[in-house]
Figure 1 (cartoon, rainbow, N blue to C red):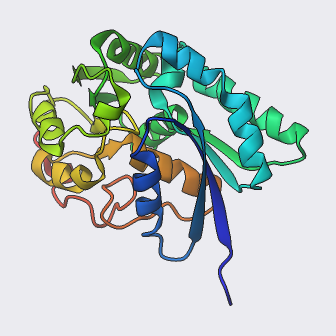
Figure 2 (figure 1 turned 120 degrees about the vertical axis):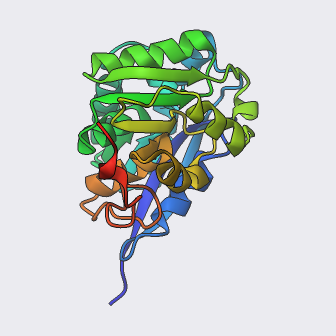
Length: 258
């Protein structure tokens, strides 16, 4: 019997070159489900409050385009674009997208990178976290405030101070790992190694779990987890960290000293 291909819609910033690589690469690891990917782009070059607001204003056009493709699930794939608008924005945005699609007679699962990170951290049982962001510090602080409004305690964070979104997509993995090594992880339940779908991180998640001995996730792995759950598929992907591979994750995750 042929397995039906599930269509995934991605709403992405025009300068993003990472999410359309990492999300398909992750979901290709699924043991049974098969997926195709369909994107619509919102113009954005600089990660600034002004450009993020202007980008969000293009959302309705993007949703209409993805509705034409008849997607089964949709991911609004820019974490900071929603978190910069204030606490709870992912719920408001997902609700607005759902209503727009319903008006077109469609009911795909609707998720966002911002909401997916909250969902994934909750699934891990993480309450005290540390994170690495590529953003300028004021935006990074808004991300921290957003997560704290969701009930998490951010013990430490890094802001790599990269404002050009194209440059974010070229941040070397070693720089991201170096930032993670500089965080105070002593009381953390989890590390978000990339709180941005544009900052490459997929190849860092499993090595970081082995090095640091605690669950590691990223905006990409959280997005994949949320999409799979929304579609009713087992959220299990080998080699993608404890969130998606609880059996194959770092074997010493729960052997840390208190």
